[in-house]
Image (cartoon, rainbow, N blue to C red; front, side, top):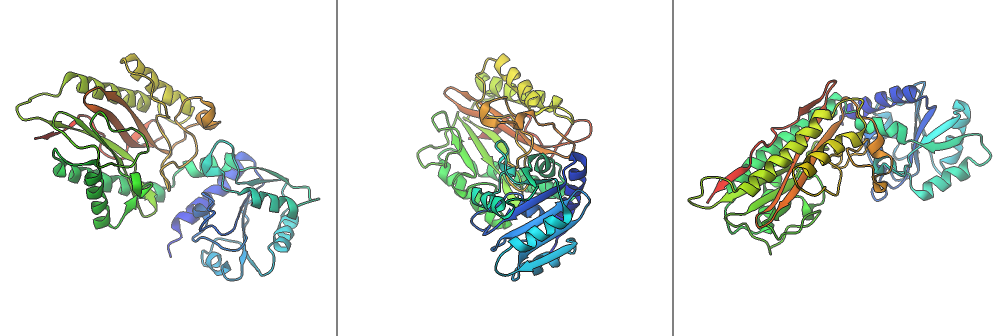
Length: 396
């Protein structure tokens, strides 16, 4: 088994603990096949069944405590300074390690704002409180650790995201060659799923609505499954939102096509204006997306641009992190709305990977919506794939 990514992230975690002046980070999990902690795959090669404690300290000391039938998985990684097994209860070993290491604060995986930092179940939190009753240790949120750990992509992570984006770009070309009038959204989705199967990959999110297919002006917009009700027609738009999981990392890209009727030589003005406006809003966000900027500032640049073009505000963030999951946590490029908590106030950092996305409805034609995947560099961004700079025309 290749542990490269986990070793990169564990080393990164030590750096972040020192940077944030946090004594210890504890990931405390059990039965993760059905009660997963989003942080676990960053530092563990497998799911676990029994109670497991993965401890990393600011000094760089690393301890894995796991059941006797799973401890070998951590021993094989070659990174844990101590690997401790148990049978009846994890409590004695866990308390002994904590008493020996004497942390003032223990960062554990809960957060009101960042779902990717909120993997500790309430039951496991109560268990920790019971185990540590009478002890001087303070349990605090690990979001200040997990936000940069999740957001700062290592070279290995970036390489995998690039590969997923490249494959998705190739599948987009296959979709273009396949399109014609009379196809239902469901037929298009089935075609895309067949292309995924050829490549041995799976969708970036739920199979039922990845890809999300929006054909014409009446198809509902959102996280909606493709339907046999809506059909591609000449003179209308088609939008597809899709991505793949390749080597455990994802892509997330939206493209828009226009099915141009025979004899028509130009794109209708309302469609072109919508596309140019959406593209301008994405470029406005891209222009301010750089290290040191708060997430909401990026969203605000896009939001002001699309409103100035005469369209209503989009009701979501202009960008989210991508990585192991399609909404990968860390700083959000979103508005300062209550439902997003503190995530729009986070600081963008180099090696963050984001989407930039928004769309507008064009009455009588359909949805113009674009989504690009980008890497934040020291001075700005790098497009991870080839951005859509013009409407893809399918002549019919």
